[in-house]
Image 1 (tube, rainbow, N blue to C red):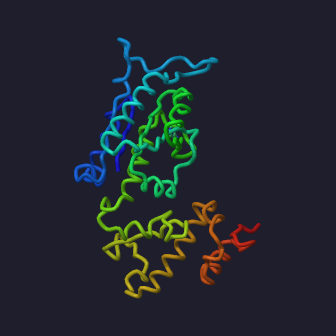
Image 2 (image 1 turned 120 degrees about the vertical axis):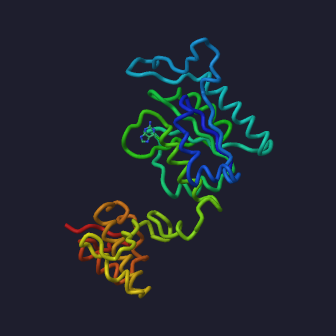
Image 3 (image 1 turned 45 degrees about the vertical axis):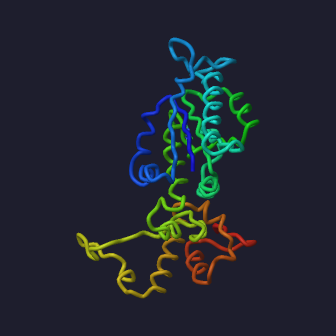
Length: 268
Ligand code: 6GU
């Protein structure tokens, strides 16, 4: 997969040289280039921003350097991926659609992603309009809170996507049962333990030492349901009730959840 990141803080992306993502880059699974937006400025002060039209607080990123940067990124990518190649442009923004594991799986199928990191109040909207005539553009948000710019979101999205590429994570089985994976049915993962079985007076759950695989699986399923009910009732409300066993329904009933029209609903 090819990835291009355009930012005014290239050093912010240095962590992408570490760990599994860094190794994926050095083994050629991930061809990632970070570009400094200021290379596409033409004035002596390398200006990238200006006051918002219509007034208001903060600054807005000017369209000219962005348009030139995205043009050059597209040209360079085509030289390496072929003339018909088009990047999927992701624009981190608190006003974007929430980034999800489902989106990570879709993006992991793409040959080429590009990220436009805004700072200040964001990028002039016409840059995104013009880019949308060249290929797909998706504004993405990490969640309902405000960061100073898109760089942290790029770190998160690149890591979430790249670890799904074949060969990036050593043991592909570890991708199967994690929280939000299709195999967990949209539930959170159960708590995990390792040795020692007794630590500072705290015992690990006895069932995990039993060697009884079916009992371990049933315990983990119950813990997933309890944890999801406590922490993410929104995820539980989205579960297809047809995927629930009798044992699942008994646990959920105890927690105050009933099946209603094929979905779960909290009583009271
Ligand atoms: Cl992607 N960008 C910014 N600036 N703030 C955010 C965000 C992104 N996601 C949540 N807050």
